[in-house]
Length: 171
Image 1 (cartoon, rainbow, N blue to C red):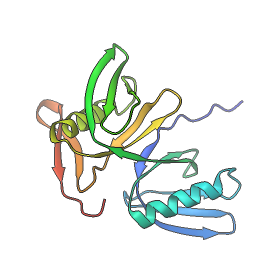
Image 2: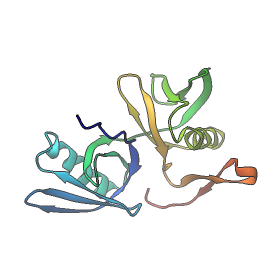
Image 3: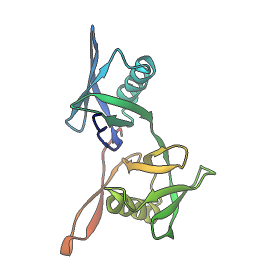
Image 4: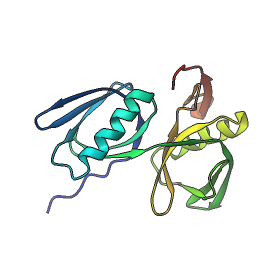
């Protein structure tokens, strides 16, 4: 039996949608693209979500399967993070201003350091961020793109993540 590929969900903004007889190609502002197959059971819902992302210039969560196939599109949410603290050795807890739930960030997430840095800076700036969470445990899959700007992480001194906020109108 073939082993399933493990991929992570990323926040992306749909720039262009090209439909054809077998589905749709989605091109994203971040420079990548993927194919949404007409055979996908959630094709209509995913296409509606992609169109909304394109019209509003808001991100969606995108999980790629094999090649450039889009396995899933997830609605992204936005809010102001208010607290980030270590729950135990394996994960941190995150609270958002307008959400009653406690979200979790797993330490083994491949982008855990970048996400922690973005959340910490957003808390410091009281900045609104976009985020996607996996259910049912509300594990954060990706965080980014604050309303009215972009908080981006890069490697600063001694390889430690650093964060800068830049204006990105319309996102």
